[in-house]
Length: 290
Ligand SMILES: [Zn+2]
View (tube, rainbow, N blue to C red):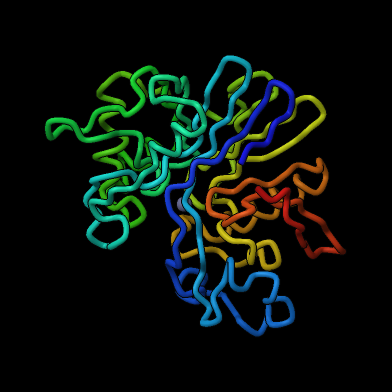
């Protein structure tokens, strides 16, 4: 798939699609009765008949003029993740997906992690001679300074990281390729980073506003389309569920007001949605299928 807006293009690189969690385990407030009248819009591509969430794990490759910007880097290969079988020492064909976009690892100029959870930093590094080295040798890797300090000082081994801070973040810092940024950072003309905390302390979204077209690469502010109907349903992986809910509503309102296409990190195909609002309730229609 490719969205193309003049000299701006967005490609998807999909690492995996799987039924990971029971909705009631991942969203403690999940109530099947609350969605019974519209579950046909989710089933079977996003929700199974026995209420398992179907999630995609993917990167977005944003090409802005001469810059190739990779947003989030999925789970990665050969990482020890014993608590999640599908991710443990995995062998995904992710780099083939990158090649299909016409980019090599050497072509990536910027790696931008929306946050530092295990499924957003994995391809930051690859294993060579028993050492984790940067996968993208010419890239600057941009991390939230706030997020980095939090995991460094307080919560390095949090369950959401599962060891990824050590094997996928610290080696980038050691290699001198990390840069720490804050809200408002401009990646390219019309491509701006904005902090929306809650899922993690320094979670970023990337706002694209250029050539009259708008999109928001929103990481995990919204995990699943069910949360568009129920933005108050935070995930068990959220650092501050209340703040996560506030950021989700802020994001959805921003999409409504600006007409931006919402491009989250885990929506299955067609991956992107346009948000609508009726009273205080949000709804969506799918973006272009690809
Ligand atoms: Zn995620």
